[in-house]
Image (cartoon, rainbow, N blue to C red; front, top):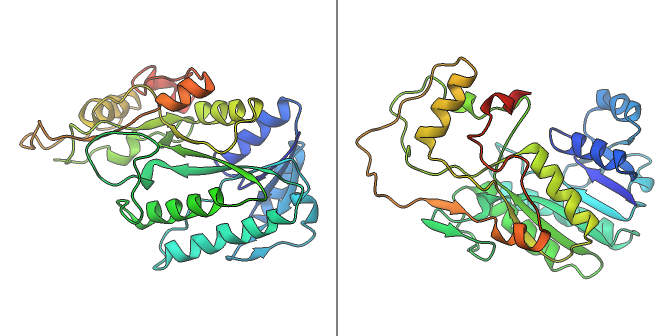
Length: 279
């Protein structure tokens, strides 16, 4: 297949390399001119492309001449109108695809689309406008727009917190004191599993589905973050011991992904082999 990846960053670049190694022809976009040679040297056809929210790109017609697009553009931070702006970005891409050969889209979303409700949440447990943060509401609007398109089929993956290699969640809380939510379960996923899930969706030609991409294990914050910090020699965080230990917290279910894709995680529990997080 010929696959275009819009957004070759921390996840998109290694994904591009994996797809290239699997025999696909891969095209990748970046917003950095300095990164064009990096992509080219990895046998990934590079394109300098930015959504402002319109498509800003010279000589990019070939980027849209593919079988499938992986859309990996998160909502920008620090914008007052993040929901409207991100929807405009996604709509621009959808309009471009409607006149292109691309008939399959994989949209990288996030578990931030879910409302802050306790209990186990599955793919259907979303409420329009009720995500915890504006970025979650922005993604939910983008998901809805893409799933309504008739000129291409969309598959959505809602990834949890991303970790692996140079991204260790231990840094988020290291050394902090009296942190709240210590009993809250974490919903994380290793980058290798993100790539494995995308690869499986492509191979199985799955279309029109929404998946939660989170690991099997959901240890509480007050177990995971101190252990992760200690694995790096960092000062572990401490948590509020007076907090209600019986409070219910959100756990994101990956059951649909495992059953429909027959996927088994390389890193099923973030507590396992913590030293590999930065390897």
